[in-house]
Image (cartoon, rainbow, N blue to C red; front, side, top):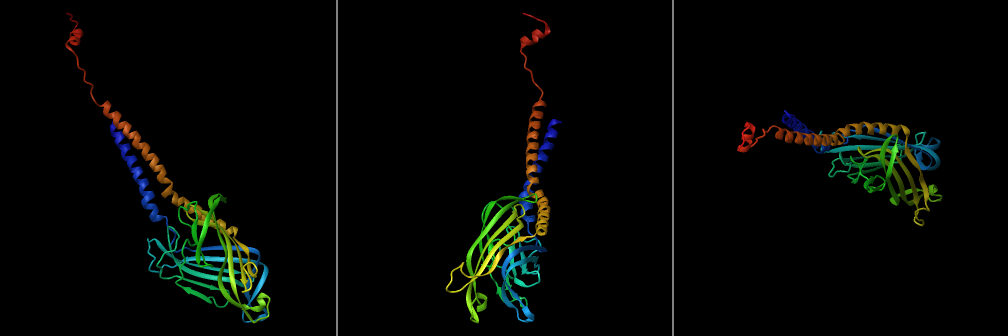
Length: 349
């Protein structure tokens, strides 16, 4: 009976170990994927910001650029999926995402608007090539969103999130303004509303991003137009829930200036200076989403550990029971000598 129970426990132990292996190494890679069609909205705000805005003042029908100080700004970001692209399969590893961002003042004056589409790996959040629908649009003009449009622009590195199982290391993350990936370095752990996060910082030094023809009056001159270089720098801080790779909290301290030919960066006319941070409502929503996804991922990452430990213990107990049961089932054989037989019968020599 002991041996039968031992074999049953052995089977259960092996099953537990195999199930744990399948959950972690078979199911996890197939199920730990970002959605094909996310429908997310995030909001960041900032106060005391200096910015170049395009506004139709005095009833003018033509928006004109004006530098304003001490502004309250709101940045709305929308991320959706495009299920029509050939790279997108129902159970595939590639998604096609569209990100739209608009930065506005309280009265609706636009500071900047951007829209981009790209293909991303659903596990790593890195850009995927080739990609059929890949573009970038940008505009300051409130009436014509497609003032700048770039088709086929590569967007390498991480995009919009971090990978599942984010590690304490540096990552290359795409920055839309410089059109390139830049290092996002690990900067420590931090608790955000009860959720452990990894903090990453991406420092982008003053970088020339474009040339512009601007009104001379904007730069304090008398010429009708002046050619100037636009320089951009940013310190982006991201708080990432490591299991899901979700950015639950974010902040950007950004500086931009127009630099004329006889100037150096730092001497130009400031056209943006300020910090935008996720609102409390956005952080709360992201924390709720992260917690829900952590619970789902635990079945694929946490449960297997318990299955391996429990399975190993069952196998150990089963082996002991089978071995002991085997020894206990053997009948002992006693070899007696003729002398022993005579002693048992009471005879003597």
